[in-house]
Length: 380
Ligand code: BGC
Image (cartoon, rainbow, N blue to C red; front, side, top):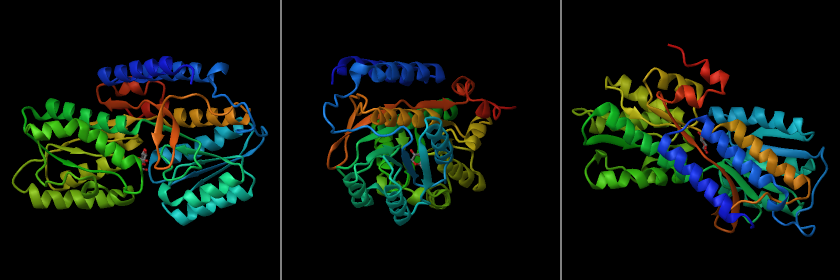
């Protein structure tokens, strides 16, 4: 890949900037523009000398299957894929699988039968899609993972996502910053929550966060009263908010009857609000809580000081990047160049990785400056 060094430097510099400044949308925009400029230039397209990655018609059927519509990001993705793909002249088939593996397998089969040229998959449980992905591959269909990695299959061509380890690190950094700001001197009592077991993002978010938190547990700055520090113990089946709330209630009544809970590491906004609600119902002072997705309710809760932070991973940018990858394949140019690769158990998958951004009350207006719907929520 020709511009490996240049692209690496852009990525590294931009990620450092994002991390150190807790930056807003301007830096994100600058990042996207730089990466798009580099990646879309003719000479940076992976050589596609042969018919190895043949193009397809401009009005082709493009399938999209998303895992569920239980969090705002997937609802946005469903609408935006339908719109962006139609705008390009494709025939979009956009579905959501209601957390049901068999339904998602059927959806992919129907897309194969409908003659799809590319299928975008946000898997419910990627480990269980290998067979149907192989079937799609045998029909010459391009397979792109969206937001979540497609594991254990050689059939996946690429993944488009916000860095998942980086997301976890940012969540933990925001939590620690909030604890210092809101709770004064350590030690801080915190508890840990993870996402759904079948989602490959969940252990990445958790492990990324633990890179930041473990040294602070080791030196006594942070105390986890329950001792539950393993991903499996902390995971939330199916990303189900009610299950997270029940676990938080259990933790409070078992370990916190005579002490305060200062913070909770939460993997997304739904689970953050569930944990905050459990603490409020138990009569506790609101702990410092991290989140993810910049969901409308959490954008408001952060403004009101009820949730400390979230991570913005704007859906429009992710959908647009995915459509750019599809366009490159359509035009017979193969996959746009990228340096980032991730091992899925069978192959190294090229990843188009965008940079997530921490949001707290302090930078909310800056981050959402170009997002009128979220800006409207920031009312006193
Ligand atoms: C996504 C998050 C989302 C979660 C639950 C994850 O894979 O990255 O944005 O909150 O799934 O839907």
